[in-house]
Image: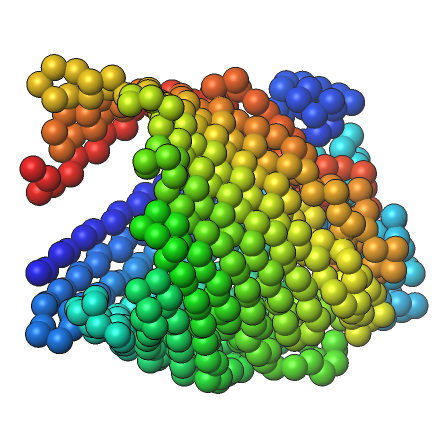
Length: 545
């Protein structure tokens, strides 16, 4: 059997969704001009185009089923940002030295920002704060672009005698990823000639070859023992080119090509017990890894740093049950899990007062523990309800310090940099009402309610000793608790579905993704949910009877 597929995406964004607290009534701003107001001088536009063809081949053999899958991904994306608040910092760094001052002599004062002993940098006189530009001539126009080319292939054999004492799956996997990221800056206030003040290009080439096997031993009709192993040969090559702009730390163009090679293994062990046709119990141990890599170039004036970092690993334990009760009217799944994250890939901030750069190294541990529960119940023949609930407690178990002396983590702090920390509780409830129509057609009404909780911390971004670190933002909080309600009506006729939907029915606008522009000013931006949205969706299943 040959199964081709093709995916295409073309996304265009006219501006970002972030808005300024000071100008927005939705955030209780001191000087509101509208519900959601941006203080950017220029729109932050973006585009994302992706093409993904896939080909799947299947063949039934006397002893096993052969499956081969190959795919190719090509993706091109770019975004333009107004980074005007960075200009004052750039001007501090790159104002020409005076006889009494050495070049790039910078002093960091917590709560004040960066300064030099001999000048006060550039200020603009904006009502937002002195570091914010007031005209397009002062704009920092920063463009980011990304190109990804990825080829993957997998060949596997799966035994096709399900009643045998031993059943198995084995195969080969190959992946080649070529990703390039670009960054380019222009700012007339920093360089009135209009020349680039910063240019950088970073290319990462990841190659992976793996063999894997999974064997099931059916000890009895009820008890199955599963042993699995995956052995990989991975290599990551980083190619960095740092341009000659004055924001490239004034140094000549330099290159970096570190390479990291590893042979990680990821075992899996599982026990499952089928008590009866309606109740399955299981316990699983598994190990995973995240590929290591190389560090981007750091100017020689910053000192020595490691060229590469290794993979970090995750070891997880899970127990659970899958049951069908009351003659199939109730389906119940739950699991309890505990995972340990080791050799974490951490950012080490060298010294923001002297060298505002960072590199990645391996250190520290964290723990994730929690549960998930899913239930689906047929209330009537035409009414079905469901609920999914999940809880996770993720925290660091070790205290770490950067080479600058700033504290990176504190044992007991939640994992992540605010506001990018997980919501401990997640819940999703839904209700379906099916209405049969003549000629076998069907109308389905669906309501859905989603809820996320607030993470109370403590956060690593609030560490008192982190004031000299680049991630010290003591006022930034995680997302608040919030909910969203969606509704949908779907008409089904044969292989065709036609739906009308409403997302964010009650037009909720929680303040999400809080961001502080810099530690020098009390100034914040937010994003929120998309407003109440109406839409149509159509789906056609080719080959369906």
